[in-house]
Image 1: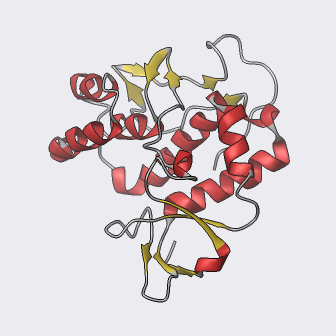
Image 2: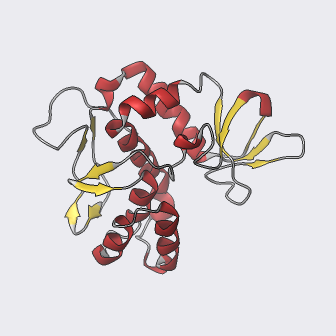
Length: 203
């Protein structure tokens, strides 16, 4: 994807979940998810659980938490058990997590995404230049900003297709895309039932 420079006067940035744009963060509270009818506190916790499809006990330890920072720490502890192909597939998995977040929290999350206008969205991180970007001395941001780019892409698709385009988020076509020993199913706005309406191609 490559590194980019984002001028400070052309961005919306987020770092802490309590700040104005904090709801864009995967760590933000108030955007609950249900995958296979299992409640999951945030998109960050869902993402971390996806690292360990072959270890349902680890997944359960992660998804039963209500604090995404703790979930991330636990996921790091078990890092040697990370699924094969994680580096290759993690962007697709993150994209899926963000779109599940939008599907199941349309009213508040789309309003937030839409209110960013047409400027770049940047996750401010001084350490992680893959998902985010660091602030430079001139006030600009430098990094790959992959999460910010996923959010911008999702914002554009949501504006084009509307809520109808996010009523069903198909499960990723990955080997061993599992949660607690069960294949992850398509995700719906409400409790899963017979598929209906328009679906969207994620990738």
